[in-house]
Image 1 (cartoon, rainbow, N blue to C red):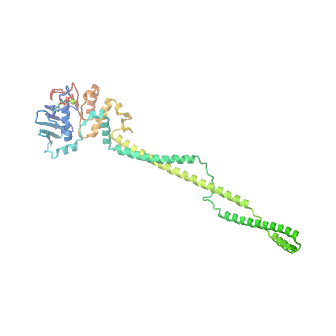
Image 2 (cartoon, helix red, strand yellow; image 1 turned 180 degrees about the horizontal axis):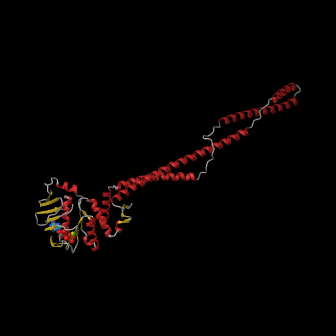
Image 3 (cartoon, rainbow, N blue to C red; image 1 turned 60 degrees about the vertical axis):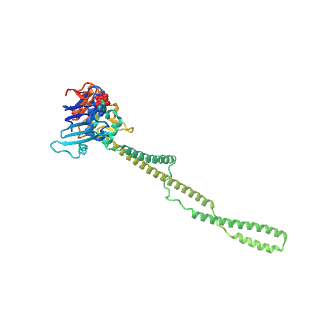
Length: 402
Ligand SMILES: Nc1ncnc2c1ncn2[C@@H]1O[C@H](COP(=O)(O)OP(=O)(O)OP(=O)(O)O)[C@@H](O)[C@H]1O
Ligand SMILES: [Mg+2]
């Protein structure tokens, strides 16, 4: 949808202006404060709805104002009437060849997006950023929060992983061919205890023998009578001496126990070693899965931006880049090209855009803009101080060179 005819009466600075564009590029010129912006504003008031209209749209001293926009399919009329409180506005839409549309603003919203101020996009970083997010249908805050969360979780795992790796790196490799479980030493304890009992008994008996020998000597010296007793005691000793004792070897058992302890120590060590090895493997897998998740998110965002425009990306600092170059670093012609592509995407139906800062664009780029307007078949209404196709003076057309 393009504007075929624009009639403005009593809007802001405008007294009466009728424009029938002949090309896609309509330049409105003249001195300052003559009503150039008022024309662009009129297009915006007619098409963008009530929210776009300021407190005093009607020209001072007038009671009513009208904006008529004719497109290929519609005649759109917005009327304003002065009231005690300010003004009232009324929108009428006639579908060509048919009747009046019953819900005019709804009809307008259906086939248009908002009129877009192209230069706003070029000069305002925030507008640009918001526009691209809107087009890409990206909730950047949410995406960033999600990535931050994933990275935080990954950081915890990474810390664990580093700790375990540090412990592991100081460990030597355990012996191989060890039994699975630690070995029990209870049998050896029982054996050792029984051996100790035997030795105790043996010692007791030896003590007894020596006591007896002492007594014998004593008795021999003292009393002959006691010889019989001595003999008896000798007999007793003789008998006692006949008792034979097994030769026991505690050393070997103790050695066995030491060996068993050593073995068990090794097994415990081997088990600890493989436990840490497993923990590291586990942590590593988790860490990798977080990395994968994070990378997928970033890829998804990249694809969404790329779908909006080839080569478009938004970096971590929210800078809009085209083919790796920050938007601000592009030439004005390149910036204009991007802005026009964006406008076409935003308003696929409404082929109308405005530029208020035409005075800041040099001749070469104005020509380029014109070319781009034709290439994308979009109508650009541009305001600039000085020479133009339409010159406005005191709210009226002074000269028209269409
Ligand atoms: N409701 C109104 N009635 C009468 N004059 C108004 C009204 N609203 C704004 N103006 C006046 O219109 C003039 C500005 O008009 P406009 O912005 O269209 O001019 P311009 O040609 O775009 O100027 P510039 O070159 O500075 O951009 C100002 O003098 C302003 O005071
Ligand atoms: Mg202006």
